[in-house]
Amino acid sequence: MQAIAIREEDDIEEEFDENGNYIYDESKQKAFDKKQKGKDKNKKSEDSDSNPLSGWSISDPITDRKSTFVAFAREVHSVEEAESWVDTLRTDRKIARAAHCMTAWRIKMDNGIQFQDCDDDGETAAGGRLLHLLTIMDAWNCMVLVARFFGGVHIGPDRFKHINSTAREAVVKGGFVEDKSASSNNSKKSKKKK
Image (cartoon, rainbow, N blue to C red; front, side, top):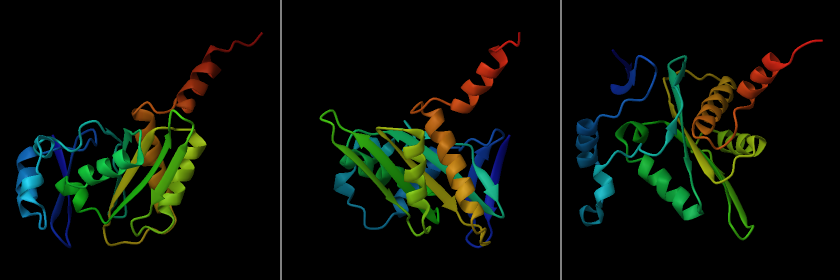
């Protein structure tokens, strides 16, 4: 069974399966790629025909008042690599239609140099909050991108709750940090009272 969310204002279809997982449709992606303007046809590589979502850990989507939030996390080892992966992910026709794609990354080089950066993409203060989340989680050599598909209703500060929860889920799914909530639940169960 497949669920499709349609934004009425521009007839954009966002496709998720019954578990809320993002569905990749290669034929629709190729049609979208042909419509892209300003792309240099000579620069296409073999990777451009493959799934731009491969290698990303993807959170379950959260929908609130017609806005949908989905997070993507991936391992990175340089700023150039992070920027390249953001560009690659944005070639997906669904991600390209997102109202905002907030990003943050933290990179620790072998020589001890550390890089961290974020981008709001028009969603005020969201990039900084993503970076703060990565800092609190002590996640290194990873990046996270949260796509918001705007439904026409402003949801105020609740958007940060959705951005953080999807980003946290993607980072934990990617194995960049230990899921402390699951381990603390297990430790509580294993303790015996005397």
